[in-house]
Length: 172
Image (cartoon, rainbow, N blue to C red; front, side, top):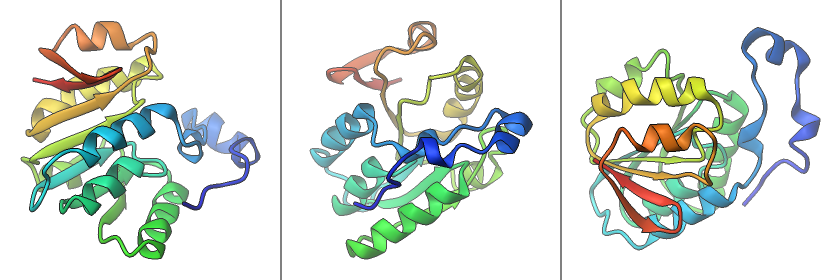
């Protein structure tokens, strides 16, 4: 799996000033690995799967290997490009697109999804606020991995939560 040698080298002061953008996508976060492990155990043959904030997209790749039709999304064009490259290099078919949660038209156009994936998305309060509005509109089984970010407790309290693995949850 290709990944940038250093996420710190990708920091762009102008992008941060404009949108508080940080290259979080460039790290292989433990939550992504944990979610990918859970996804790899699922029967996803023919399922329509959406990953939000995919970054390097390990859960999306796992879902595609399990037979899902996958749309992996991130707001960083660099993440989307590298995810496409990793999928092609591994012979894995999936779609990867740049999508912002505050402009979710492409996500809603294909809703309802069978499964919605997200790993370590709650690192900022603004993400939790957007996701509380967006996720119910996407439909499907929601699988979320979170390492215990500050926004996670209040976010998870809004759902019926089933813990599938350590800090990997099904939300209803």
